[in-house]
Structure formats: C-alpha cells, structure tokens
Length: 130
Image (cartoon, rainbow, N blue to C red):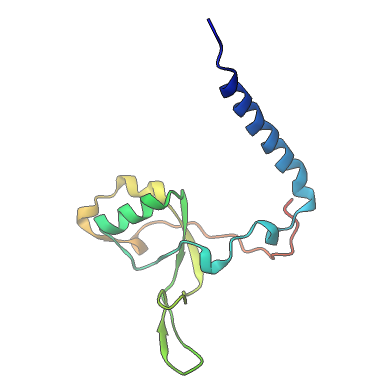
C-alpha cells in the first residue's frame, strides 16, 4: 500500500510555518499584522438579520465580525455623512460571533443589536505582539 507523501509534506510545512510565526512574534508589533480599518468587513449594530444579510455575512467566511454604531458626521464640505456610507463608519463597539446566527430564524428579521457581542480589546499599533 502506497502512502500519500504529498499530503504529509503539506501538513509538516504548515506546522513549520506555524512554529516559525510563533517564534517571530517577539519581533513584530501589532501594526505589522493589522488590517486597515477601511478594508475591514464590519456590520452596523442596527442591521436586520434577514436572509440577504445572513447570507452576505456567511459568504465573507469570517468567524467574528466587528460591529459599529451608526453615527452622523460631516465631510469637508459640510455635507452630512451617515455611518456606513461613503466609507465612513462609526466606532467599533463590539465583535459579533457569526456562529450565534445558527440559532436564529432569518424569517424573523431580527435586529443585530438584540444579539450578544464581545467587547473588543483596544491596543496600540506600537504594542509588541507578545
């Protein structure tokens, strides 16, 4: 019986990469691994969890999604900007565990702010990863 050596090699390579990453954490700062806020997928606290929004969240493939509070601000020309539009979002105040949607019924159109969220840790981009 022939063993599948390529599958074993990939598994070992993943382990090597994992250990190497852990050893290099001492040299890295939080800013090295951060995703710019304008590239972060986040959802508004008042999002209705209907079928369309639930599918969108699942399709993103994240296990945790930042939740922001809708806010209002003005741009440089004094025009009103509502949170979530034109690239502006309010402050991130929680993190939603996507698996919590498993027990909800999307036909109820439940509002996200009725679901539990985790309080995010706030750290400086200059903080050491360890």
